[in-house]
Length: 337
Image 1 (tube, rainbow, N blue to C red):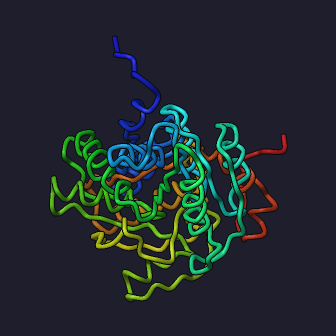
Image 2 (cartoon, rainbow, N blue to C red):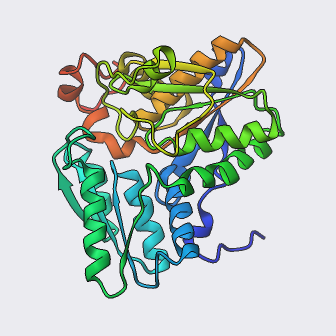
Image 3 (spheres, one colour):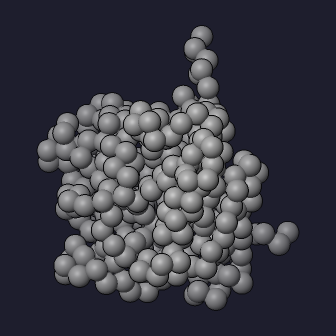
């Protein structure tokens, strides 16, 4: 009999690796996706949320009943709301107003206070990250129990959780046979932490970056310039700066992944594997295929299946939205019946 979890937060992590059969056969590599959508809050960001909250508790920055404030594209906010509800911390989430309605509604269903702000470049003082920092400072001064800014982009507790926990899970689940790891970057915590953790086990593990168009990191690694080109419908990934979490991350294979490559893979995963995942997972899987082809057959490649496609129904399954961006639903997916 399995021992019950003491609370929901204790169920975060230990997500299974799932073999992507069609793509493994096509590349001659074992391509494995870590099923992060099985976390209680529905995404990989539950891990960062838990790591950040536990670190703030240890440091005494987050006191009993204190409020957690964060600027997020959505999933980290959901993770913080889950962890906060379990541990007795209310959450206030600042989000850009161009994110999916599904994520906003989910946050509010968890009881989080959501404040939407215009989507502006990071250099703008009204960017959601800067707005959340100012709000956390105001609430810390005015609330009796205080408040803490999660600061997922530059709070190294994010990266350290992945280095200590996520990388160890991957190493154990593959029996030490992992040859490459690749994923996209939002905060940089997942890729940076897993890369460091796996390299501690095996220094020659190949590390790849799957960067959507509209992000500057591919050009950073190929030309040394933080220059973004194009755009992507994927949410929560891509960045125009080097965060503290991502600084000095070893990347052997940077790839730029256009939506024309990643979005069809999202639908392919539904039909061939039964996996309904979001756009960032499509970018990650496209990157895993590219990395598999770069290193050649016979290798084990791991990537992250970050969250469920149900959070993006109004985008991934909206004919008009897709058509306006030169994308289309596959013929076999009949949403009009």
